Image (cartoon, rainbow, N blue to C red; front, side, top):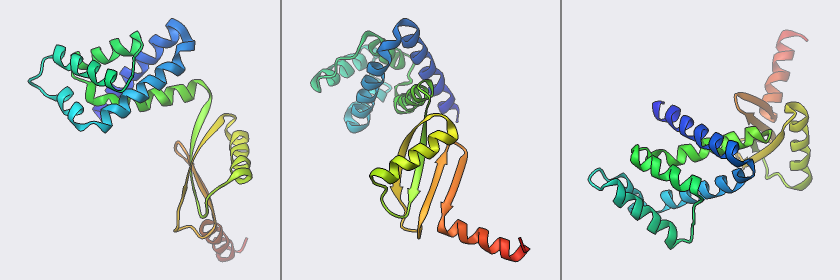
Length: 185
């Protein structure tokens, strides 16, 4: 829990620094942070080297720059200094959490809300558009849908947005019908 709070503070500081300096750099900052995070997570040997307690910060910085160059990632000065800060403060292990929080801050700033959708069948084309439209009307924000198929559902969808769950599954509708019959309304 403490690490999440620390990651949130670092993400907010990075986000604000870039936004206050030049807001138009935010999309590029997000892209670069996501690239570095993917690299960090996909190369266990690099991750181990960056977390190794006996390596100096300078060696870790050199290893990171070398790894970034090898995959043709050229971080902006903001991202470069931010990665250096994480290495100096021994917080580089928080990079995936920080990247996730930066993405959340971006979506919040763009009035985008993420909706997790579990459906009985894959949602395609118009069904997905209809659901996005209904959710936009409900939340008055653009909606980013993360759709997954849940074989346990017979029909319908279950939508989760933050702490809000909208259960429009057949099971839920049948339970509601049963309650109505039991209580006579």
